[in-house]
Image: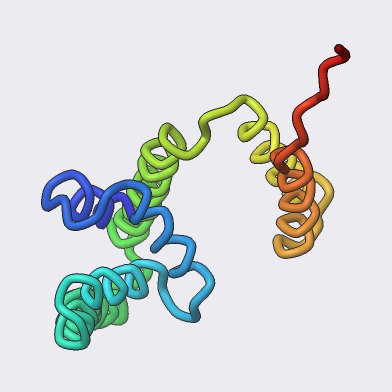
Length: 158
């Protein structure tokens, strides 16, 4: 996602941050990988069906080829310490990319202190209370809706 955001929002300016967050939300509700769904949505926005198909092939083919090569190498040399070290390095890089995306999107999306409170409640519910993610998201989502609901202005006494 960090790579997609950098390419789509920062470098090419095909979408803005608001559209990126909206497409990310849609991508997360669809089955499949978020990055693939995002690429198809943006491809469709830019060039219709042809753009969606081009995006699908462009995002899937390189990874599929790389995974075939890595799988063959792992099968041949799987238990060696260098292979294990390389896999740990890849895992650390993946965590760094996820953190970078979270920070970049968080700066734009988490505008109020209470947004961070809702994030903390979500993490606490899943991590410490061991509740399912959908259950926690529904409960915290309802709390956020109640907190941010439009309120009637107070009438002043005359």
